[in-house]
Length: 168
Image (tube, rainbow, N blue to C red):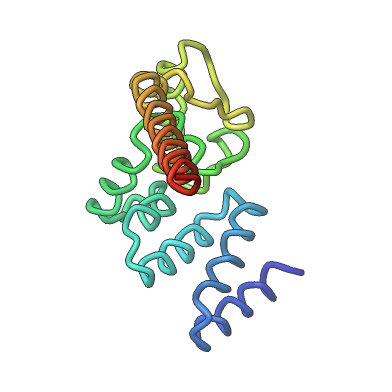
């Protein structure tokens, strides 16, 4: 379906109060046309209707007239450069950006991601940041496993106690 027709459907969905459908259509359009800043703005507007400043900030991140609170919420939710890089859903080089500001933002995020990963990265092969995420997860994983083990042992103890009481 052509871009214009899909945008007309988005407008119709919004007018009819079908905000989730409009959001889904816009997400698909941004995925198909990642360099179109107008689509990103429209998607940010829909997230504002939901009251989600982090997602509005995500889609307005490449705009110079973005809201500082939304940008801060986005940066807080996607706190590492690799996460931000993935969240922006850009494809191709920064030179495809429609504005100089957007190109500068993309270059800054990519440079921060390259520094965090210790190697050059590009937008077409956005890395996972598992090394950054693993800092506190070993303790967390251990505690989660220990909690599950305690729950299973408690269940078995109750079950055995009930079985013994049944034959007494």
